[in-house]
Length: 130
Image 1 (cartoon, rainbow, N blue to C red):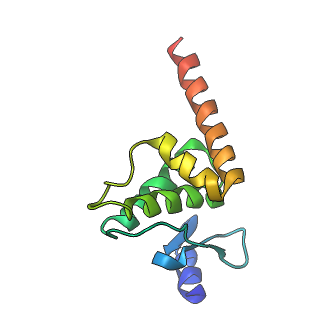
Image 2 (image 1 turned 180 degrees about the vertical axis):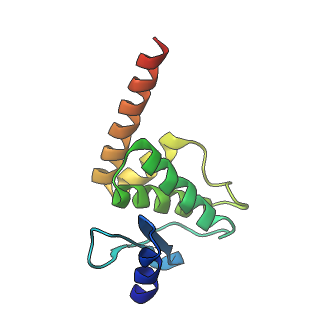
């Protein structure tokens, strides 16, 4: 797996995230020598349809909030895990607050940093609206 990640990084990407289902995920960028392995978050699985999409959505949302890649990956893992708790591709996710609450139970530090980034982003939008 590490060689495949290095090959993708060599193509010029800024970073790579690989989901591993019940094994969590690996993330790596050019600044790190080895991938960071994050474990899966425990849930009672009902249906895995859309879990990868949930991970991608959460990770992208985290990055767009300005979170560090590892924190964004934690948000992705939380989203993917919650998707697995319901039938269908998004049945387990209600809203951003629910995802942060779920993440904070097992990973309070990343959840707090993501929540802070979201507050900062919202304040910037409010300031821009005047």
